[in-house]
Image (cartoon, rainbow, N blue to C red; front, side, top):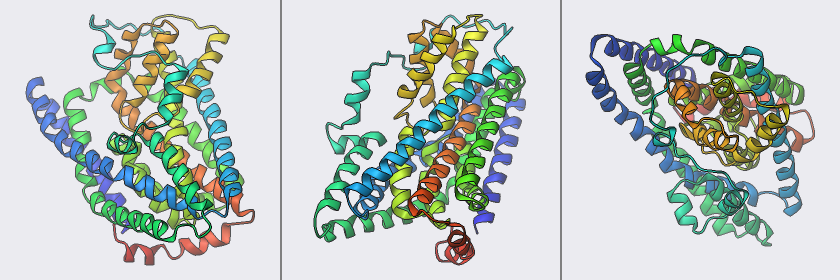
Length: 427
């Protein structure tokens, strides 16, 4: 059933591109825009359904995962390992983006006539401050945080609640049972929502191609191709890191997460793949408490694809304007993006807000955002898929470190039971 669902997603992608191309070729711009607007209703409904699930699912699974840890020392140990991996992965992602944009020079010689309207009309532009970031970590109200889907604030609250439950002698069995039941219910709801994914994918791609057409891909071939080449390099490094740490189970891991990766790619949203990623990681034999702890944190602190895009796109804009940044400025940019990218929402166009803040900080033309907006959706598909891969590898690595022994045989045994599990919990 898993393979059939993946094939259905691929068919929806191909059909969406074909329909969008046909609409773009046979209709005038206003008519194509009207068709795209109607198609986008399906995508919007799907993403709203996903967002409806995220807050209670993150809260319930994270609280349950932390509460099942042995003690505060275990929470601190797992948390330290997780953040250490995230920081390392962030540095690697940002550095690859920086190196590749210098090697490929996609913006050099690009001559485009920019529109006169400012980028602030498309993307909210604001200066980043440390005070804003730190105060934003703590929710004024957990109800408001859940209503706004502020994942980072939900994570902070959930960690505190889970730690409190773990610190109680009897671990508050009634509360623990409740959050586990909520998690089970939300995962079942997720199964219902995922049945609509092919329709959403079809609509998303059809509407995008219908309005922009295939020509934009030729115009930005160097930028798009260079960025996807960089993502491919990052995927290769993530696979090698997984292979070195968890051994042959890395092959099963990458095979197992292909459906959530495809879902994130098609919808250009890391959030859309969150419930399915959690489910697939557990099928791969990764401890549920590790998945419940690492994955929500990863969606705030470990968006590898989005971080790479920030350096790649910012320097692309600088190249397009013929602006050279010194080595010191580029190092400062890496450090700035290390902080501003944390808590970046796993939703479409979130990276543009971070890029706009970076452009403002370095006095680069904010209108440069208009250069990348035309293909941002296509690029967002790749970086969203990469975010899923990065977080999945992080969960597998932390699980391996926590076990302190070879997990290969155990994972293989669980992988052999995948068919039975899928029959019990169909797609």
